Image 1 (cartoon, rainbow, N blue to C red):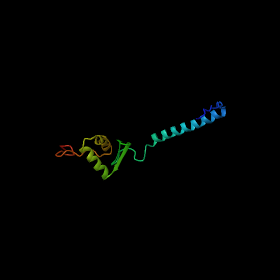
Image 2 (tube, one colour; image 1 turned 45 degrees about the vertical axis):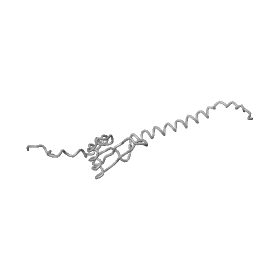
Image 3 (cartoon, helix red, strand yellow; image 1 turned 90 degrees about the vertical axis):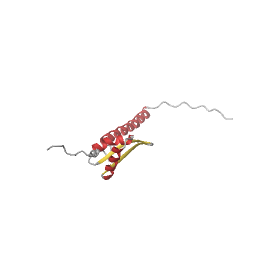
Length: 116
């Protein structure tokens, strides 16, 4: 058998206790605000798609995935995106255009305007 023990009533918090808890709460809040501002101002090392580099954020089985390619890897990624119609390809196409790696011109079409 066991005996039920009665809990002793707790003492009310003193002013010093409340101030200490408020200070800790404000420090935690300030840390969250600081991280939020930092993440907005400096989004990451990859940044946006530009100048031959492609950055795509896509859904993944473990959350979000970041795909980043530059140079030949970006060209291959963009060729594949414009050749297929799956969801990832559709997400990749606008980023390829931003990087200046749009679709190849259709065969038989001239890249320069006719007449001159």
